[in-house]
Image (cartoon, rainbow, N blue to C red; front, side):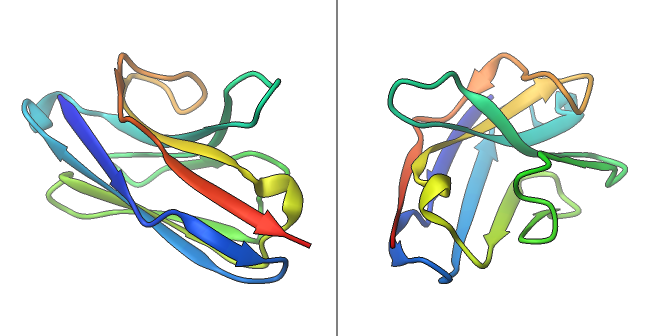
Length: 118
């Protein structure tokens, strides 16, 4: 499975961004797709994940602000981010292939940078 992210950028606090992830390869084997992020000096952390049956899991820090969606074909996934805060600044990675909503799978994208200024 190959993953390609798009949609990162720089915004001011309170702004919005939409990230997208396009998957190719053995799509039918993907159960969970998710977004993870890593800020300098921090470990990579789960932001949100979604399964093929549209169950979702969100980090507490983004609940109510971020929304994860997945196309019915399973080939694309998006993360709508609103009311962004400086602490959301990180490199965001698309992930796929996990059997659970709380742990990452083996496939990673290259990442896209999100920078939120105060």
